[in-house]
View 1 (cartoon, rainbow, N blue to C red):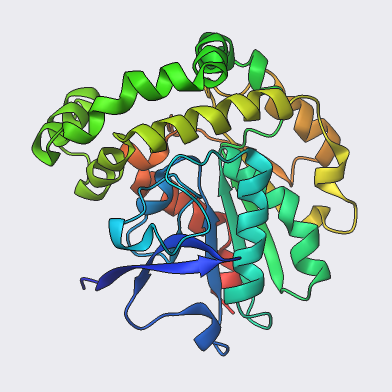
View 2 (view 1 turned 180 degrees about the vertical axis):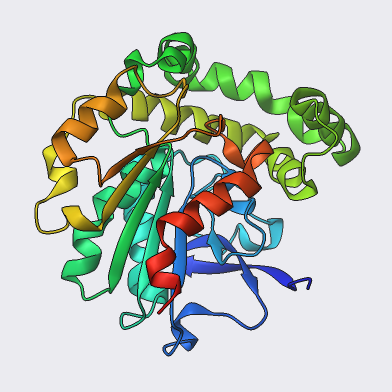
Length: 300
């Protein structure tokens, strides 16, 4: 059965934010729903799970021309990691029901965001029954293989923002057909879902790329040492960390160290060879994995 999907723009703390939603589901109007899944993604991947109620990061997708004069944020505004974390919490406060059980999921830096807002959500009366962190980047990002490879480049282009803006200024000239060609050329797999291609095409934009680099550089500076405050004892039993076997955004032995700290019932290791960006090729495999991890809540 095909689920009808719609896209709209709403204000979250007076800032226009794009949402993708199903015709028959709007969270706060469904107080009697048995369970709600909320996923916090990394970068522009919010648009990929097409059958979810999803919310964009600030300025990680272009604001339509007709809304630019009404928005509290400008096209070239750059947002840090903490800005995006606050934005997600504000969304919950304004749009999510409090009584309905919520399974909160985070992917990559989205896991860090979700861990940050978990105590605030519970303290504000939200019924978060589980937090599932998929391929979490929650410590030592800068010394991970990808952190070492990209850190210098991100720092340079973020520091020289005017130069970066000039270098990317021509992207608006590209027609969508050419953006699609660029994306397909880089992904190199004809079987990749169309929704993944569409989401990747949206990244080919000067303000979006600059915001992604700005936030990624900030992540490498902030997400360093293990933070016990992310795993408060009173909420620890609600948290699951699911690590990749060869995740280039996570330093070696990180999963083992977390298992020692938190216990093996809290930390799992992927055995299916899924990539960090699993939505590209391993979506079905990870969907089955997620179901197995939260199955007890689905049977209620």
